[in-house]
Length: 171
View 1 (cartoon, rainbow, N blue to C red):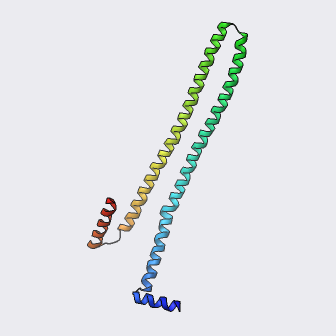
View 2 (cartoon, rainbow, N blue to C red):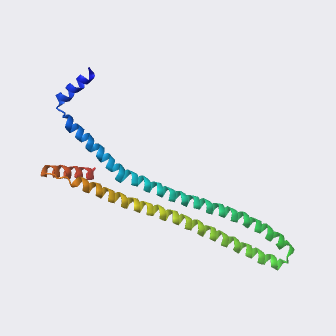
View 3 (spheres, one colour):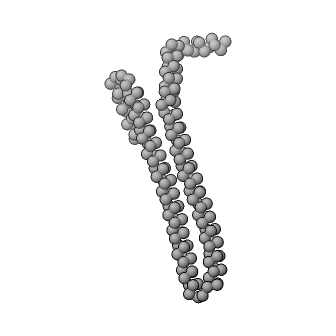
């Protein structure tokens, strides 16, 4: 009953089975090509970039842990220096205080430098990932467009395509 209705509907609408089947096969081939050419390489590229970015984040965390360790060690050094300063004469106390201040400044400068370098590396990797992704997308778009444009088109098809491109650019 339902199949008879569907067959009558197809005949009434003038749909040709062979043409419909050919279009379905063409669509399947197009999906397969896009899957192989576009989707798989892009997902691989994005996975690699995500891993690089995660490595950069992990490195930054490790630097932060090292900074915390340095701060802890620095605090331990301060306690030790204070004990020694109590045993030394007033002149030695002034000199040790100056040395501690310099050590703090140098340690903070090193920590700041290391953090800035780690942030620069992460930003550079992000920029490089974006540039490489843009290059890949541009090449992919050009490849896909060249495959579609190799189809012979008449003047009417050219006009239609130009109008569609103009509309999409304005919207």
